[in-house]
Length: 230
Picture 1 (cartoon, rainbow, N blue to C red):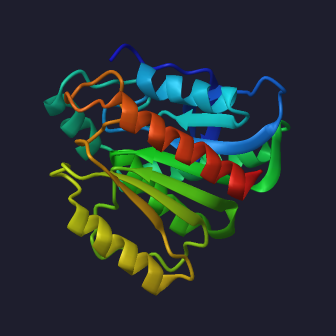
Picture 2 (tube, rainbow, N blue to C red):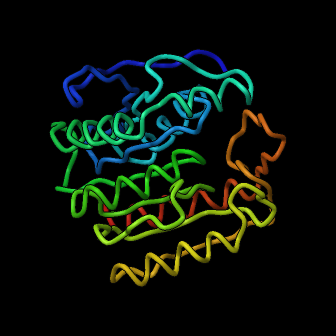
Picture 3 (tube, one colour):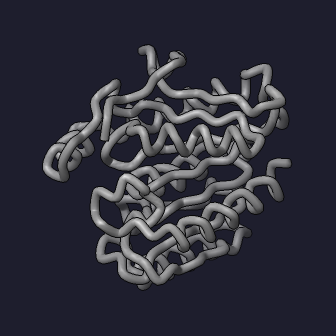
């Protein structure tokens, strides 16, 4: 997995949080927050930040583990379990503040893309931040609470999920989409892929990386974010 990549700090709930920020070639663009998997701010997540920046966005991944990166599933599970939900939410809120206050960010709302653990956090953040998040893209992740209250969510939602995912099976995804529709005026756009969990992760820790499905999901994500942030 490599080590955590950091190049920016920001205030968050009385402490200093860290993250990795990348600017687009032109120096300005819409802001996109990238929320890590349970492994941490790995080279995979940092490379996704770079890819979003290359596509024209000011992209930021907050480091929710404070510099630690998990190297196996047991370590990842422990690190996720030891992360207080309130701290994660505040770190993400501070990251939104950083983006919206950055001179290179255009617009008064950001997009959020989250992966696995971060996919659920992305939806939670969108609900808690309201109009400050205009578009949210969860990749194979849902909030831990199946009864999560989505009423604060005003963002447009694009979800990428795997047909063969035992962690977030299609039935659970469909139920969450129904709950979002009932709680808000948004009808999520959900895509299921003939792949396994974490099919976007080219470091392939779970053996499910699928280059074709990853490319499809990536192009859909860019079109969606530009449609709602551009």
